[in-house]
Image (cartoon, rainbow, N blue to C red):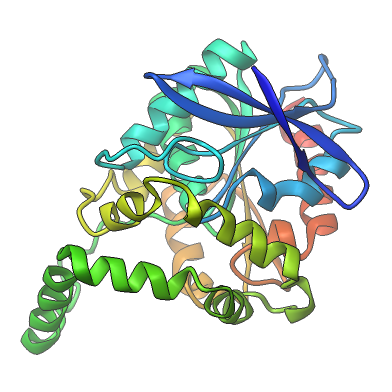
Length: 300
């Protein structure tokens, strides 16, 4: 079903389409046509949407069949009151690939979308022709001899989590975080190039917070079960893997996480970019060029 138009750049409109999954409306966009290459499926991070890939879609559609999807609970997709998890989004992406795209894809995921994409590639390998992770989220197994935080830190952590499980606390935090000035300040903390934090980007991030159910999705973060560990998933991976790191990311400490990915999957390819948490939006030309070259070399 085609309902609206999403602007992928100032000049290029993309048709906004919807797919029904488990009786929930899932938003996606599609552009380009390249039957001789595997399609790309772009998966956004927490709080973002297909809009966050606008620059990449316009550029990559000349060379690939490009799809981008809003995970359930985000963007223009439905926001039901559910328990959200990597398993839920894994199944959503796998079913979308199977029923809508119809052939294996190169999954391209940022942050939370990277973790969901890794879950698909590792646990639903028939859907993945390749995997590209940009500042991927997700836990790693702690070494048995890893030092434990002091008891007082553990107590504070438990107390904080208990507080934010309270509806009033998550409501207040949600209202604070969705303010345009807070969104801008947060983005400026995680983007190396502050000029990339535009009014349009702030509006794109804020818009879904006005939707019915957005507060419940946000609150579910504090209740969600932790998913499978990244190292376990990487050990199950059968397809080629490209890592693109925005090395100025203060949330995903690249100097700590990159060696863990390499240890779990030594045959990966990786590049370190002068960018922050969202390199695809901050340095889209570099990301797109690395993606093109890697597909040509690793998947042909």
